[in-house]
Figure 1 (spheres, each protein chain N blue to C red):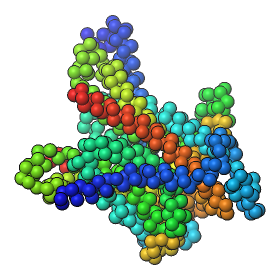
Figure 2 (cartoon, chains in turn orange, red):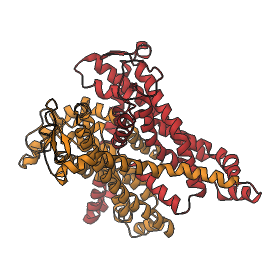
Figure 3 (tube, each protein chain N blue to C red):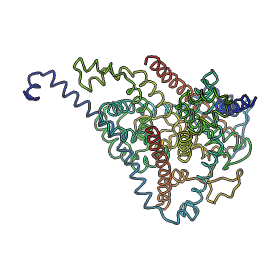
Figure 4 (spheres, rainbow over the protein chains, first blue to last red):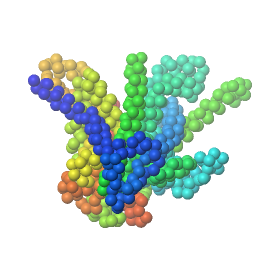
Amino acid sequence: MRTSLFRTGLIGLTGIIPGILFAVIIFLALYSWPAIRFNGAGFLIRQMWSLGNLYANPVTIGATEVPIGAHYGILVFIVGTLATSALALLIAVPVSIGVAIFLAEGAPPRLRPLLSLIVDLLAVVPSVVYGLWGIAVLAPLVAHVIAPALGAVLGFIPFFAGGSPTGFGLLSSSLVLTLMVVPIITTTIYSALQQVLAPDKEAAYALGAMKLEMAVGVMLPAVRGSIIGAAILGLGRALGETMAVLMVSGGAINYLPTTITSPISTMASFIVSQLDSAEQDPTGMAVRSLAEIALVLFVITIVVNGIARMITRGLHVSLAGRG
Amino acid sequence: MSVSQAAADFPRLAYRRARARAGWGLAVLAFVLVAAPLLDILGLVAARGASAISPRLFTTVTNGISGGLLNAIVGTFVLSGGALVLGVPVGVGAGIYLAEFGSGPFGTVVRFLSDVLTGVPSIVLGYFSYITMVIGLGWQFSALAGAITLALMIVPYIARLTELSLRQLPVSLRESAYALGAPAHTVVFRIVFPIATPGVLTGVLLALAISVGETAPLIYTAGWSNYLWNGRLTHEPIGYLTYVVWSFINQPFASAHALAFAAAFLVVLVVLAINIAARLFLLGHRAV
């Protein structure tokens, strides 16, 4: 009897975890429902975000009361989110593969714990400290060195031309995101590399392969699935990153990026930046539309993370089954 | 025959050697590209932060964009401490369930959802708390709303790390206890948990580090206050260190920048100390 009571209590505590997830999705959906009805599907593809005239009397459109001239479209923020994350992954995945191979096969075994600690510590630096570093170091570096260099080499492509007067924008955001996702991707690939079976490696050596040839020819193909899973895991992190991006993004509104140094906003960073303005809206529609952004972001990250977890977990099981 | 002689005799081998050297060069370069920013971040925060540290920082509250950080330090303690008080029982309980009884479909589903919850952007959790507690329950920006939000964030971490450390114990340990007729709660609390306590505590400390470094979810729940926390859980905003970093670095005043770096220094110090201690501890513990 006491046993079942104990177990029931534990089940109750455990149930809180799925409960949190469902509560988040249900309350966000309920709260943003008037905004979802008012904004329609155009919410995702309209470029204009305007709170309207907050000082005039609100008007009633359909059954909804909104400020005059209010438009809520988040295409700019969706593009900003996807562009920063994609660019970050484009840099982070090759770098992470390089670091993981270096850690697994290249570095002297005695140094490995220290070197992998350095990679791990990148993951624990708080987001806001990355933002601080971005403002103090990275943005000036992008403005004076990286953007001019890119422009000089790749300037014939309009996307890379134009330089960056301030350094705040797409490139800086992506570089900060890169640093934040590299440890996630690297540790996942590194632990997969460590599980590659010794006979497979020895077979390559027996055929006369050098160490790097073995690593690239045998180990990397063996962990192909983990690399994909790790990249998606990194994507999930990059999509939702808020403070660091907010601090170096330049905060674009109603403006799509045209070059690699354009100011941008992501969905997450925009939500934070809008707190003060949205609270001024007497009809509350701005706060509800921000809830709709949070809902969209929530659904995207859930899907991305779900896929990543299924890929990495499936691999884990198959590896265990093989061993 | 020397190596270079061999290389000259076998051009294919020379090519492979050069290729391997270039490949390792790229791998080392990748590592340097990752390690250099980390060292630069730590160096920057240490240099600019340490020079801004003074006794006044710990004894006076923020006054506009100057003064001390006492209100923010106390606030960070209150918010993170509150998050632990709320999050540890749930996280540890769930971790125990997952490790001891979680082999069925319910355990599998919770494990998956807990990983998914870990991946939910903290700003989404913050906005959820904003519409439910700050607006819905009318708590306004408050310590309780902030602490609950941080607790939502750290519960899945604590659960999974607790599960992990319990699972490292051999099954035979539990079987012997059950064979002696011990009920499940005795097995868990008297046998398994005492041995796994160091691992569980490590998980709790790592969760603490996460909550100390968080900013985004607190902006929408805790607000900001120049004043020392007066003990009210609701209807009273509360300051915290990461807010100072975010907000003050954008002010055009040297005193504001100094405070931002000082706050960043304190946050990084706590987060790094916890993480390095946890790692050293786990290394030592595994070796035993």
